[in-house]
Image (cartoon, rainbow, N blue to C red):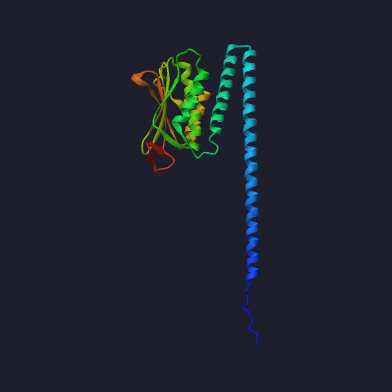
Amino acid sequence: MARKKPCGSRRPSAALAELKAALAREEELLREKRELLQRQELLAQEFEHRLVNSLQMVVSLLSLQSRAATTPEVATQLKIAAGRVAAFGRIHRQLHHLDHEDSVELKQYLRTLCDDLAGLLFQDGAGRTVVVAGADVRLPTKLGIPLGFIVNELITNSAKYAKGDITVRVERSATALSLSVADDGPGLPGAFDPASSKGLGMKIIQSLVRQNGGVLQFAPGDDGRGTRATVAFTPPSAGCRKMESKCEL
């Protein structure tokens, strides 16, 4: 008498066919994912290209309007706006190189950014520059980006009043990171309150500092001269480990 196969049992050939079909579906899904990522990368590149072109167009239009302005005050404001848009474009290009990076070496990045800003803000032969000093710190790119914008605004403001070099300093400890911009300008009034400032640059700085959980402070610079603006942050990760004198956050 023939024995019946247990209920639910399958022949090896049927199980193998199902396995092959599952692997084929998985391969198809992986292929579709790769194609989607490629399309997204192409779209991102196209967006970057269009954004840079649009920023350049805005700068050109603002510059033209400033030359055609009927009053010096309007011309000055348009020039300031053009400068800010141009600076945004430069920072954006700098940061675009970090698109596929999880972290950035802050001091080296700031040096590149500040060299660019010095070339824009100071005329040839002015004998002035922006000095970047301090600790070597590697940060997550998502924090390096707003710090770049903050430094840009602080340096742009210092360049209006300072007569000598502007110093950007990076300092770190096991629990905190600070970034300061110091100049030799006339300094700020004793009762200066950044929260009450109506300037566009100060509002941008405060917004970026708040968004990243930082604290903004102003104090006299070296030897009591000028102004030192300091932005202090708590590192994104409490476990800050040192590697070859660099702080990996």
